[in-house]
Image 1 (cartoon, rainbow, N blue to C red):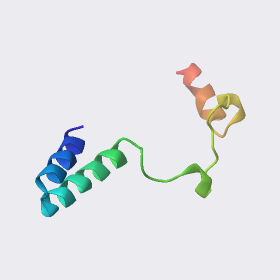
Image 2 (cartoon, rainbow, N blue to C red):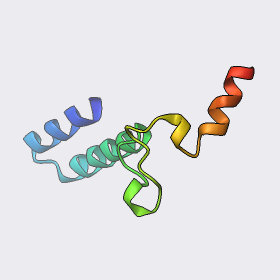
Image 3 (cartoon, rainbow, N blue to C red):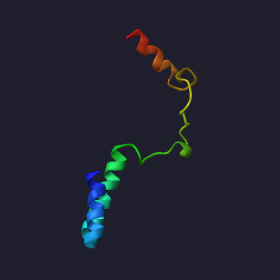
Image 4 (tube, rainbow, N blue to C red):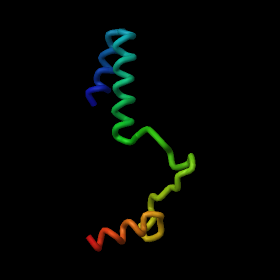
Amino acid sequence: MQARRAVRDARMSDDGAALKTAREAVNAAKIALGERGPTWWDGDADLNRKLVKNTTYAEWFDSLADS
């Protein structure tokens, strides 16, 4: 949120350099949070709403019970 506030403040002050820096910070934060990056429709399977036993992670998940 700090980066988003910096974008707001830079827009209000009409500071182009600060706005660019703030937008880069927002982008970096979104990447770090996983909001931006590889997408499931670019080749990786969409595993949302799937039981783990029905995915490629089934063997790994079963091994957790043994630990």
